[in-house]
Length: 433
Ligand SMILES: Nc1ncnc2c1ncn2[C@@H]1O[C@H](COP(=O)(O)OP(=O)(O)O)[C@@H](O)[C@H]1O
Ligand SMILES: CC(=O)OP(=O)(O)O
Ligand SMILES: [Mg+2]
Image 1 (tube, rainbow, N blue to C red):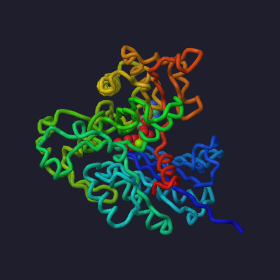
Image 2 (cartoon, helix red, strand yellow; image 1 turned 30 degrees about the vertical axis):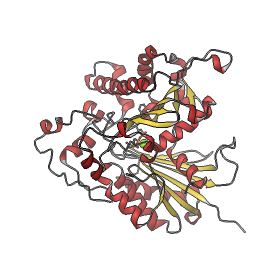
Image 3 (cartoon, helix red, strand yellow; image 1 turned 180 degrees about the horizontal axis):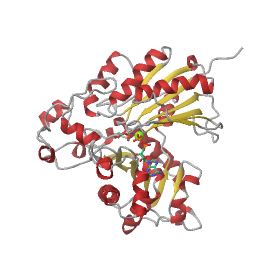
């Protein structure tokens, strides 16, 4: 008689993508080196959701990937429905074996721990949708589908914001009337926390140093991009704020700008934009809508594809691509410089992650060259160009001298293949939920 497995499904609703991984829980054989409490069975991703046609990929471990461009995928809910259909057809997985679904929810407000989705948690996430207009509604659309299609599985929300609870008030507060700010919850929450938590653990393992001893500058550079300053293994500061719009520009997001600018950009800035999110009615102004969806490198270079921007730049004579690349790198350097100072120059590593951070050798080379003046080891062009072909979760881009580790240069430049799905599955399996 076959026994029912305890499967964990992890779903990551990013602004431009839906990334999904399925694991077996608690079978003890981990990822091969005994470090992970879960074992990966399959992964799937749907990218370009915000710039159709969407690209769908489905890969069972040790199988070949099935890729297509499904016409029925136009948002996160339809992307998830497409995945569920594939699960039985391509992998012969019985949905009834899924005991737990982990959902990445970007804005959790003051929730500091994962929560089981019930009416109260659902309403809490829904109420925060206007503060993460590209994200919370998309996650709720997937949660709704799960509650309907996987009724026996527990749905648990894991929050991006939770990792940043260590940011001290003098950094998380805005210079505003604190009575009003407190009443309305107006402070820096910070995002990409599941990714930063994963990166911290992996870099600690790679450098063979306890996480609590590490000072790091982490760059999660994807469709949404942010930087995080880690002091003694905790978030001290991060570039996103009340919403994921603050800080660095993204694929369709402006990043930080002078707050007065919006009233000069359009004279209807304060009017409601009447946008409908995937599962919720959003109450955002036209200014918020423009800055979230019609800005970033899409506005500067006409594409959300950063790889296209770098190849157009290489070909030469493309002012839009040059501006998008150089403006983005400039803003990243602003944060690296500031965080280096906040850490008193005692930084163990600068780490690149996210879609661009992991795949754009051109961006890493550009930034690597400019941070050398702060004492970072030189990014080796050979290593940098070969990241895609290099195995491992963490890749060292710097030339390290032969010999004992203590003789190596202190400030390394690393790439980490971040995995928010694994971070959630891990936390779920280790019983934090
Ligand atoms: N080879 C590449 N070079 C540069 N950028 C890339 C490359 N591949 C993907 N990207 C960029 O990564 C971004 C997606 O990042 P990712 O972190 O996966 O997205 P999300 O923010 O939706 O989670 C896209 O904007 C894409 O332009
Ligand atoms: C917070 C955020 O911007 O997430 P993503 O990069 O996945 O869109
Ligand atoms: Mg993401």
